[in-house]
Length: 161
Ligand code: FES
Ligand code: FES
Image (spheres, rainbow, N blue to C red):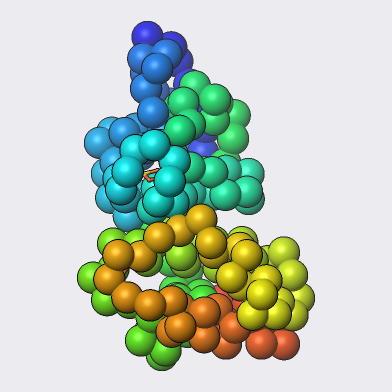
């Protein structure tokens, strides 16, 4: 076993893990962060996306030992202070069906609105292309992300409290 220390959603975590333990399993099974979804397990569906030091990472292809010293963000942490503009836009635009893919889309959308002030629809397609939704078309998801990024204010939190 290997001792790892990192932060998850702003909280310090210290765990003993197997050298080959996947971040997906650590987050879901040891830390109870079930917003991180298992889809394909081989890096193709994007449903296990989390942000590590602010960058998107596939938790099914990432070893937990490799996030030692890092900051990991999942949707549970994103929502701590209330819904973000992205989350609110997903609700308003009806961009959720079964919701299985939604945490990954939300995190990728957060990454986009933090990275680009006024993304185009092509930017939205490009950033979100790695996440697959098996329920629906992507139109409402794209609309929600564009709405959230209006005025480049997507990173701001809304609906506090
Ligand atoms: S479960 Fe990680 S990419 Fe599909
Ligand atoms: S809403 Fe069901 S998989 Fe995307």
